[in-house]
Amino acid sequence: MTDASSKELYEVKKTLKELENKKGRGTELVSVYIPPEKQISDVAKHMRDELGQSSNIKSKQTKKNVQSAIEVIIQRLKLFPKPPEKGLVMFVGMIPRGGPGTEKMETYVFQPPEPVQTYTYHCDSQFYIEPLRQIIEYKEVYGVVVLDRKESTIATLRGKRVDIVKHLTSGVPGKHKAGGQSQRRFDRVIELAAHEFLKRIGSYVDEAFLPLKDELKGVLVGGPGHTKNDFVEGDYLNYEINDKIINIVDTSYTGDFGIREVIDESADTLEEMDIMKEKKLMKKFLTGLISENGLSSYGEKEIRTNLQMGAVETLLISENLKSKRLTYECAACGNMMQKTLRQHQKQEEERCSNCNEVMKVAKEQETAEELIELAEEVNTHVEVISVETEEGTQLDKAFGGIAGILRYKVK
Image (cartoon, rainbow, N blue to C red):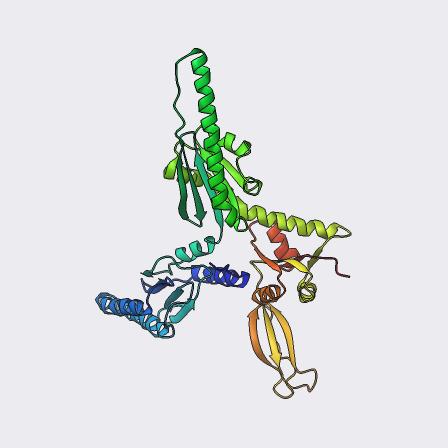
């Protein structure tokens, strides 16, 4: 699976925000998710069947709007001999602009940043965006281990999808009541068997999670009793995996139920992970600002210059950044210039610095999207920062929504 680029993720998140607020007058907004292995001809046939079924809709207006949306989908499908490598997502429907009669057809067709898992056709008063949210979450991988002395289950969590990797049983004997030396000898046998079982679990955990270490965001460990603590505190795991343990929880079960229990009990921890990551990055940026040798930079002009030099290690962009980058071209002499237009700023007439002719807008792009493209060209990591934290709000309000942590000091 190829990694989604920062630009792809930014664009999908931006589209999600737009789609959240779209509402139809009736159940007339159509959402279609097409997995990469699905035949386009099968989807087109299904759409034609739905077109026939829609004639049973009682409301004339809703029927007309649903049929119009399905017809648009059928036409768009003709552009694809087969789905792109990650599948296809389509949102089509009549969105009202005001009172009755102000509806306008809106169409969103794109390849998602991660593969579509299940074919879905959905018709409702809102677009069905939950699978798209899960596709974005799919990038985030967590390891989950649940264990006691009798058994252990190892799994991965991607978004809301749990994949069981391995289930192990120990063969460790139960308690024995012989007494005396026989009892002590039996206890030693039990302890040795338990130790060997923990070693075996650690070996399988390393085997499952080490290949994922670069994308593994954290490891969750759970189980009834103290065995899980012995496992974490003992020398059973590779240090790279052990360092990623973010939560240890008590559970009533092992097995598949135990895995689910660990995930449910860790909900708050998982939610905090992204916020803590953002806070850590912003703290590094803010500390760099007040340090004499700090590697921090902010402001669109300065960041743009530093990006072009390849000096930016991590580009920080506020999710609330609302400006456009306009490229002007002079029809008379071919001279070009660029300008950033901020939200609520009126677009004014621009004249060519060479011949004073009025210039036309040749290209219009979201500033965030354009900066992310620049960053990817010079191998700069990009983080889109939410405004849910005090630090994220600070980036948006105090630093214009654009900042950077540098690779080296720029003179």
